[in-house]
Image (cartoon, rainbow, N blue to C red):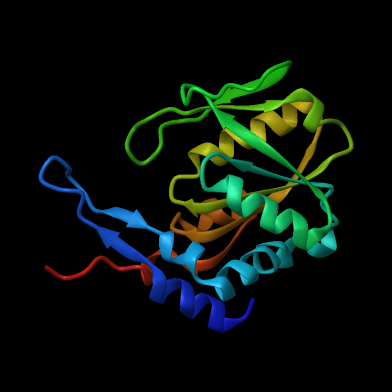
Length: 186
């Protein structure tokens, strides 16, 4: 992965204070989507660690994954399968395999579902996401793949902010380590 892309991702990232009702800063990755060089580089960079493993499909969770997943899939020349989130008002039609995540960094459990016709035995899956902190959603996605008979090759994320042992266990590769995106002093 080109060091220039990693540096640019850090430059374009912001922490935002959503106001007095919030107890924490919120990540703002919108600068990544606005920069055409970053946008062009993300797919190939996310695909690179898994190219030799020959994925047959890229799987990514809504919402940001719906942008990153197709970028990586295009770079690999394979298809894309979105993972839908329960409760977002846009549930998929047809047979769908669901799994619930363990608690995330806010203690929430997220229900994720993939249409059965998009994932099955023989698929070699690359999971793509923007940020991995607890890997809660990855656990749910890996469970869906197992239930469908698909093999998970690993995960490629823009930001990896989880313990190294967890990253190794789940085969997570990142473009930027979370500690490089430090909150402003204040």
